[in-house]
Image (cartoon, rainbow, N blue to C red):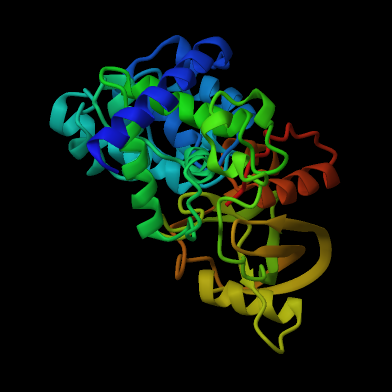
Length: 375
């Protein structure tokens, strides 16, 4: 985009967008108190997660960890417990690791530049841009999926939006629209427009401040943009889990930090391999993970669950230990826990449902956490 074209686009697009945002911005908790830590936390939680789901988690997380220093001082398990049910647990692990890095290197003060933010664990181009512009007033863009959709439609960008080259093209278009001194406000406005008006299906073009300049709208059919490559078929796996009881306690294992759902506690087990029955699968998994032999008994519950890139049916069986004592061959830790005490351990949504089934079978009444995206 030439300098003249950029100046024209900025005048024609940025001003009405900012005016619209001033009138229609949602009242969100992270917009009421714009400290860098609160903005960073909100941006991390909002990755892949809807605003309405995030708000109660955001408020609980701040109540438990009101400062970066307090987050850094916490144990990872405590952080994961507060995060439980929000999903995408790598976000929580990275947030915790980044907080410890910030405390160690800069006495708990979040770095204010895009480049410095970008080196923190879990901080990518969007998050760095959002925090740098909104919290520190830097003249940088923050282009998420909502903003990409708006830009694709306004400028009729027909390339595959999942490709990095197209994403860079959209960032360059956004740079040309940034108003001096108002980058953070512009970034929020563009995202807000995508989230509330320029939606993936049935966009409300009649309410859009950019409709008159939107090439897709003028062309008569904005909904097909942005273009994405077809999604692959989502695979499905059968998984078996052992609810192994002894002396009123149940055996649980902690996943390795580097694994998916790392740091969470689970009823041990794993994915069924071709040719195995579910009991055979579970017996093998218990040998491989904990070095024990079990007698697989009855089905306690069956949980169907969708992760981002695959689906599972989790079959939880009651089991009895028949040989050996548990040792961590493929886990971070294990415990024998009273069923009532399972509430204190961070678990995935699927395992929490198994815990609830066990507690219900024993006449207890667990309080289930809010359920967000589980992956």
